[in-house]
Image (cartoon, rainbow, N blue to C red; front, top):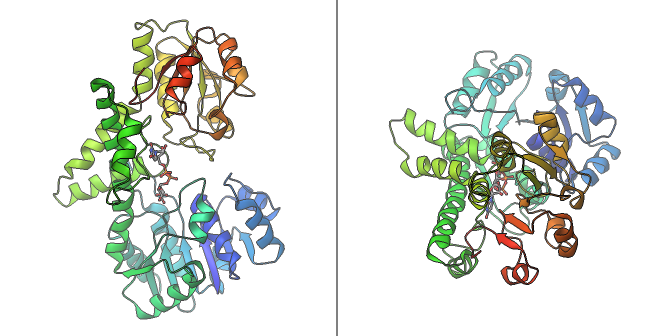
Length: 434
Ligand code: UGA
């Protein structure tokens, strides 16, 4: 099939590349000329494991193209994916100006039937708005489909190529047939393509992310309680996770959820409930608990040093909001850094992929180390914020030698409690004994 993808951010680029991989002809379009030039020259603007191989293969074999010209991109396309940003507006609701702007432009340009697909996470009712925006510009027939993405950063390629499910929201038979054919190669193992109406599809995306954020938040609260009653959250996690109704995944307590999706989507669902005079109480609590959880490591540090943090030096491992990504949007590390700096401390950080992005945001507010060990020199404590594999089994003798105090605050529960005790560390993690 011939496909256009409008917007080459994370979602657009993964979608375009993975759609080319099954033999489709894909043109990705973006207004950022510099970025388009970069991709035309075969350079990937993002870090996503496994994407580079597919990106180069499909460019090399002539199935993946890039342009800044929307007209050229959509001229021959049967399907047009909208993968544009929907940033939170001032009031927490998603800002649809990019999506609706593109819909209008597409409306002006189309000459024959197209399926226009919203891939960005958009509030309920957006398909209708896209339809109206296009209707205002054209008499040519088209269908608007909601097809939310469930990609996780870091494993986005795998998630796209072998999705747990594909959700397609459309009431048009014609569009349903085209979308079903497009996704058939991705669900060969029998995973479902679930067809539904546009509104249910749009809400599915928000409900999925909000449910996962709630699951994590619930575990964070259980962990906090574990500390108070002397229980071990690792045990509780295993104990409840083996019940299939609860499930093993997404039960890891930590420093609060971050990233470009959960915080924004939970906010947007609350907002959209508000607009419909519904108070989504549980999600309001999730937001509140997560705000506190993001600072939990700082609170532990503050307590340990009796509030005297001025002049102290901290080593911080992990800046990205999770491993295998360079994404630092809404990363808990940034909140912890802020608190430490405000308390008069200094921070030296190391992250395998996230340092450039943090440097762009906060510059020299902190120092950046070339490797995990050089961040430790003479530090009063080590704080672990992201669970990169590199941090899972360090040389503890080295760590002990380099730190001023043998003190570790671990926001991701990476180490065995007994081992830490044997190595002589003061080791404070989440929901476990000290
Ligand atoms: C999330 C969803 O998992 C995807 O299905 C969805 O498509 C995506 O948002 C999106 O809407 O685009 P992502 O934000 O990439 O994906 O990251 P997750 O792996 O879901 O992690 C989100 C946050 O939860 C991270 O801060 C992570 O550290 C935290 N988390 C996750 C925990 O604290 N504990 C867990 O057990 C799992």
